[in-house]
Image (cartoon, rainbow, N blue to C red; front, top):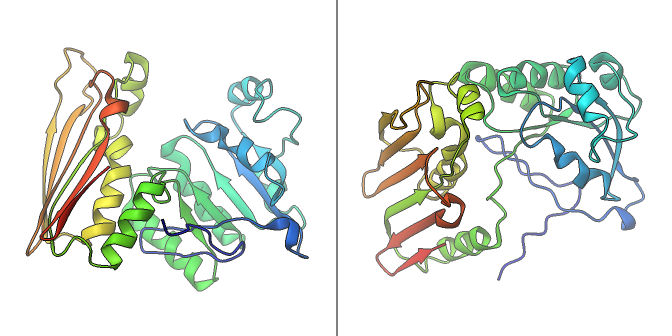
Length: 281
């Protein structure tokens, strides 16, 4: 299987705001990368513990303007004993190189824009807000300053996906004509209310992970047909049962995601069909 290792300070920025890095701080005379985090309100904000446990990184501090969230986080292991500071204090910390933006989704882009304006590399959790123009402006500003932007898509370096990319590069599957992807789970009533804020519903929240993979395989579609459904007997207006059909000149792709699939974690899959073979993960 091809290696997913990338040089420690080498990053690949893409139109999808990808940034990928691997580690080797012990051998580097530059010392650890100094990072901080803004926000604990995102569902995946606790990933900070990975950085704290990695000698390649030095976590200099954390920001959380919401007092209630901050007090709750201070007692949790990922944030325990960290230095709490304001956003201005963090961005002015000597030697700070990168910032993880882990606020509630509605606030991600505003904080990301401030960090880029301050000359910092950023990691933004997904999905990166609802404004494509604002996101595009952040990417443009980062490119102008030679800064790196990373999105928190979790499957790009899954070993199976790494293998798939190698198979595609080697043309082992032939011409790709069909791709299917499914990513679903059961979302509880409280979280459904929070997600109902976003018109994109479960495709915005969860389907984005596999949609990212489909576009990585086939590129930008010629057309997209969305199917938005509210299927649960709950009065929360969440688009909880969704399908997207992506059309290409010689291929089609479907992406499904719901908030109601029992044991949905075990049925998540990606299937890629080509004229010389089929890949199923």
